[in-house]
Image (tube, rainbow, N blue to C red; front, side, top):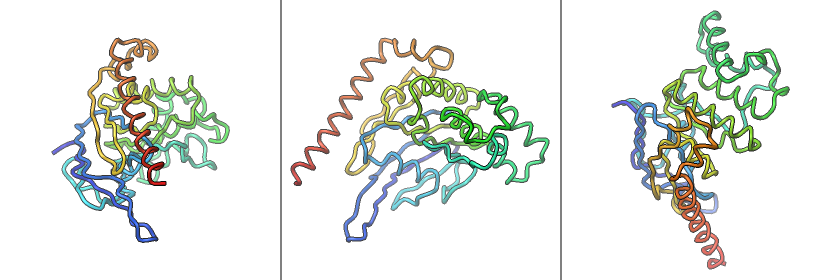
Length: 268
């Protein structure tokens, strides 16, 4: 079976004092090849834990994960990660960062250079390939991180708040780039974000998670990502469904946060 299958995943963290935290409980998601999923929820709902399990950085307490029919047992180049901070090699040039994965796989230099040049053109950095990473702005560094991920040709791209540290204008440009890359590459993408607007714009599917324990609260299928591929995202936000969906989800998450705070007050 092709696609990414997350079946009844639970994650329980044992604490040194003998207590335990149930971070996730019976989470099940199936993503077909090429789907774009955004994941929202209040702090502590297990979004990043789920992403780290799919990446292979954490082994779940129970449940099963498969990608294209084989079990996920640990990190693998078939699953690429883009972090909130680019996690780039500061001592390398832009070109060297993007070409690092192919070089480690022993890709012939001519093929590697061709791939790197193509990806840097796609992300708008062809004139910066010899620059050091520290010379670039935050938005440009995230473009390098995206290109480096794509250079490994993963089946699934995992994005953990990759645009959260950017200013509003740069973030909007990067959102458009993510949609462009999604359509052009056909990659399966899971995006974690705290921004309701971003989740709506970039999620062909959107999952809202609830905390204590982390679980899927509600799922949406949305038209905005497809619309945003060829349209100005500011125009997409004017779609008659966008505002009501945003308010519905904001209220949903607000109610969860209120419940969490109330629970803390009652516990005190």
